[in-house]
Image (cartoon, rainbow, N blue to C red; front, side, top):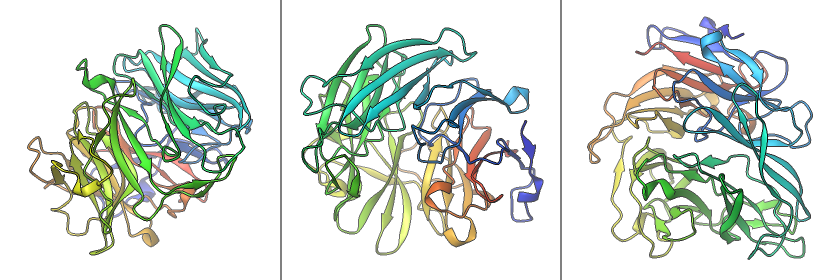
Length: 411
C-alpha cells in the first residue's frame, strides 16, 4: 500500500499538497514513460512496473512485472503480467483491457514478438498476433522492440517500433509496425536507419481522420552497429518530429529544432485529444529548455524550425527561467505538469494551464515541489497527470532506490 511522504514537502511547496510513495520494495521500480497510455479514463487505476527504470526494463529479468495500481484501494498493487519479456503496455481507451507484448527476439536474429490482450482484472488473457518471420518489405527479422506501444483512440490498432537488421551491416533500418486488433494482421508502415527512436504516439482524437495519425520522432545522423546497438544516437542537428498516417501515407512536419541553435530534447506528445503537439526544445544561446506547441504542416523536407508554413507557440515564455525536459497533459489538454532543473538540486515540478488560444502562453505557473531525484538516466523524474488532471505522478531515487510517487492537492 502507498506510503504518505509529508517529509518531502517544505515551506516552498504549494500549500495543501499531499505526496505518497506508491512502490516501497527494496527493488527499483518506475512509472511508465510520460506519453504512455497507462491510465483508465476514470483516473482510478494505472500501470507501473517493478524491477525497471524510467526508460524500460531488461527483457530477461525474471523480477520484472507490470502492476495495476488501484488508487481507490489505497494504491494497492497487483501483478497484471508474469511472463518473461513483457514490455510496451497500453491500456485501451475504454479502460477495459491492457495490450502488451512479450519479447522473445534476439537482436538481428529474430525470434518471436507476441501482441497480447488481457482484461484489467487478469481474466481472458489472449494472443492477438505473433511476428516470427521477416515481414514483407523488411530487410531482416524484427528485434529490439521499443519499450512503449501506442493504441488508437478506437482501440482497434496498436503500434510499436523496432530493429529490422539481419546482422550483416551497421546502420540497418528500423521500422514501425501497426497491428490491426480485430484481424490480427500486422503492417510495416515506416522504415529506415533514422527511425531508431520513434516514440510512436497515436492521436487521442475521435475524429475519423485524425485518429489514424501517429506522432513519430526521427533521429538524423544516428549510428548503430550490425546488431542494432547504438554507437551514436543523434547527429549534428539531431532529432526532428513528424506526423504520419497509420497506413504509412501523408508524412507531415512539425516546426521544431534543426536550425543550428534549437534542438529537440527528444520528448513530445499530443496536447490531450487535440491535433496540437508539444515538445521540449533546448537552445544553445541563450541556454534554456522551452515548451513549444505547434500543428503539423505538409512535408517538405527536414527543415525543423524553418519548415515553411510552420506556426509555433512558446507556452513557456512567461516562466522566468524555462528549463523544462519532460512533461505531459491531462486528457482534455488543459493542464500540464513538467519537471525542471537545476539538476544538481533534485529538480522541480511545475503545473500550468494550457490556453485554448494558440497564441497565448501559460501564465499561471505553479511550483509544486522538489522530487529529490539525482537526475541520473535511470532516475529521470518523468512527471505526468491523471486523465482528470487532479493527480500528478513522478519518479525519484530520494530514498536511494528508484521508486514511484504521487502528488495531489492543488484542486
